[in-house]
Amino acid sequence: MYTVPDLTGKLVVVTGANSGTGKEATRRLAAAGAHVIMAVRTVAKGEQARAEILARHPRARLDVRRVDLADLATVEEFTDGILADGTPLDLLVNNAGVMAPPTRMTTADGFELQMGSNFLGPFALTVRLLPALLDAGAPRVATMSSGTANYGRIDFSDLQWERRRYSANRSYAQSKLADLILTRQLAAVAAERGWNLLSTGAHPGYTVTNLQTAGASLGRDKPKRSLLNALDFLPKQQVEEGTEPLLHAATSPDAVAGGYYGPGGRFGLVGPTVAARVTRRALDPGTNARLWTEAERLTGVALPAVTVGSGPTA
Image 1 (cartoon, one colour):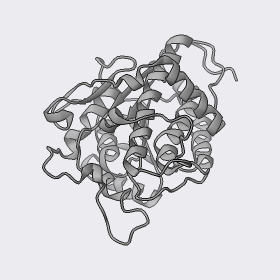
Image 2 (cartoon, rainbow, N blue to C red; image 1 turned 135 degrees about the vertical axis):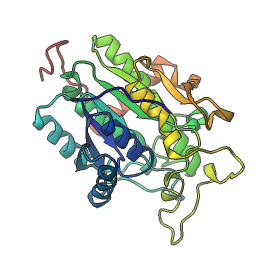
Image 3 (cartoon, one colour; image 1 turned 90 degrees about the vertical axis):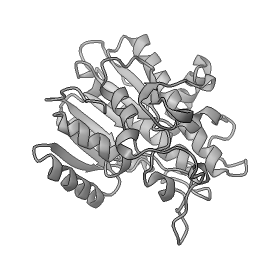
């Protein structure tokens, strides 16, 4: 089991912190001494998760705040609150997401739900939080992708699945490839601008959480499993193991800029954390920069002007 380093005095934001890998990451980061802001869509569920974590770790420092990554207005409200606190942000964990809704749905801003929730929302959150991150001594951003990124395609002519026949699984794969590209491009931007910011990525393999049923059940009367996870003969692991790559990406001193981590066992679905193979579709600098620019255009969120070593200037 991965041991999270001492995080006493560190401020951390974890999205999707009320369940699954987000809740487990929150628990272990808080147990290591971090002050964790649990960024959740439903505050009541966040408070319940907070109470459950406190029952195991009574001294944990946990705050629950609302953000809906499918609604950019709440992203702005959430990040404004973090920036107004005036406390440097040491770590952002982009964990929340939705998986394979059966029909094409849209966010509050009109984006296809998976592209909006899994990529454009986290992109806006990350960029808006950069001033707080860059005020920290050694800030990090860890973003959860998926093994499905390996067969994802970025279709710049139809990112929102408005022209093509909607595919729940291919749309999910595109959004998680976009997350991997976010990891790589943020690392490139940090290097280009001389920021002491470490951007890393992870995938959980086949980890049993409610992600497999929640998205696939949207718009249905009865719970349904996603096709991506309907093959019960595949090796699978529980959330404690499945969160390890994300914790490694977020906190390990061995993690590198643009590094990508996942299970190293059978089919890359289970097992101890290793450096995962990055699909060639996330390795093209031109494509990565283009997707970043398109995300800026769609969200209306752009990089801040920053002077290295002195925090934000505008």
